[in-house]
Length: 214
Image (tube, rainbow, N blue to C red; front, side):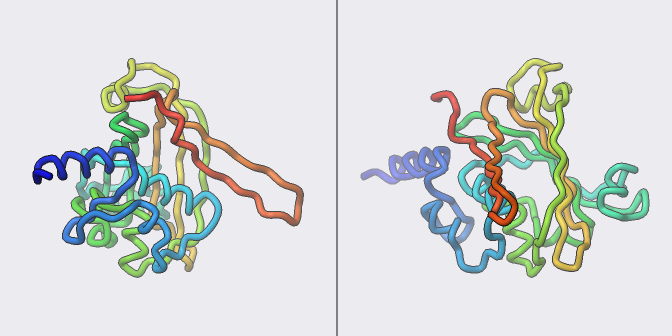
């Protein structure tokens, strides 16, 4: 089989979320990375966020240090104007844009989430691999209208109604280490919640499989 054919096939499998292409390590089945023993995130929403990240492709549109605006400083419990890392990404599934996210982290965590690293693995996995223990998250869901930047990234009309999520992730000491604002394509993203009686586990998961054919 010609080398160009193999590359094309691997690229297609990556778009389908079946394999993960790691820089310097080659190509692995997505399931193999999802069950890697070093991961500490097990069960519930955080694990499913990681799973979605491993089954999708991401493009990093922006990666730079900026002074924290009021909302960012409050979420990360920093002084206003403190240096933070801003990362803007578009995540795709089967070649179709799924969500647009702005993520802010304390500036000292920038080395753990270098731009090239985020092309290969979810941010939470990158943080854990650098020795930061991700423990919990607080998330708020609501509605928003797509501004021009979000609309262009998701391929929709400005003003389209979207699901908006804001999330603060903390490490084991309770320190805020990530503030995320996500906007999700209204036709390609579903949020499912399974509820149970007190005393039993409640499971939350993200379903991004029901997408239109490409």
